[in-house]
Image 1 (cartoon, helix red, strand yellow):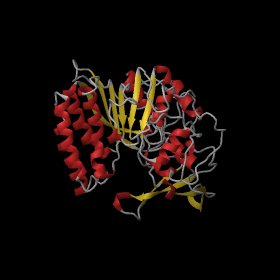
Image 2 (spheres, helix red, strand yellow; image 1 turned 135 degrees about the vertical axis):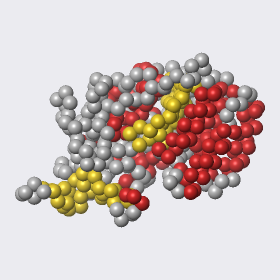
Image 3 (cartoon, one colour; image 1 turned 135 degrees about the horizontal axis):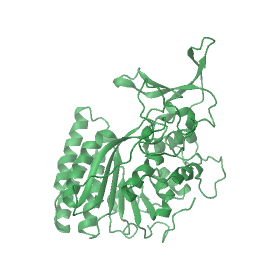
Image 4 (cartoon, one colour; image 1 turned 45 degrees about the horizontal axis):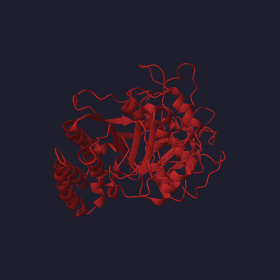
Length: 414
């Protein structure tokens, strides 16, 4: 797979779609951008965590020398050529949105975002940002303000750099959807056609039921109220108790990187068993580390014919148990199996099998990432306004970093 060709080791080269990816993580979006290179796509990530940066380096992904999103901006030479802004800010402040604290965090961010809207000059915006920054710095959880950083970059690109981003893509957990919808309103007044919706990863061939709130905005000052096209589902939605659809076009189950086909038809969901067929020969049950309905004793259970539950940074706590059938055909749970390896957890996120995970906190890296397969659908529709090309899914399956022999895995612990 061809790597980016930067002007320097930490600068984004000129490109039709030059992406600066904030809070970039291990590369769930950047690896998709690399696969789309022939369409004029390049990317550079901004990432704080040293271990995650090590994974990115091993994967050959471009990363800024400056680690802190707050210390950079669209005018910085390393990212000044970017025409596209993407990002998935940390979500810990909003992960308890069903509680009083979660709602309070959302309400505060909505109010602060309004302060950053409708400015006509760089000086006016700078004054507003200074006040907003003072308020977020004073919060008990200073991570709450991270979600406003993309809005700062957007406004500074227009008012200070004087070259607005052509396309903006933001993603996070579903509880952040009200923030993205509020951002969309602000962006329409700024010159963008913008919408925000929740996408389900299993509907795009990811072997995992994971919901993401996604904002797509496209610079179009003369037509800000037009509809923004979002990716259309290519695979069956998962619902507990539903029957899995039969394969289409003669395709077998067990095709993690199967290509989508004609509009109006969907493939069956991709199961855990499909994704892990190379390492898990029999049926199994996964017992999630999280309890359902707020009860830690009520652990969610999925059989290997189903998509995985949401892969989190605690994925190593998920237990795997052999699923056996007795002579009558009834299923019973058998012995406990080895827990997921980093490679297996990555596959459930749709990362390539040879992705070079690094360090001892790999599970957290994997759990925080956006699935690359979902990224291909989102980027293709946001940048090219059309579904992804079939060959990209083959390239995702075959991808491996240069210089790493197949099967080598250098992470110490997941």
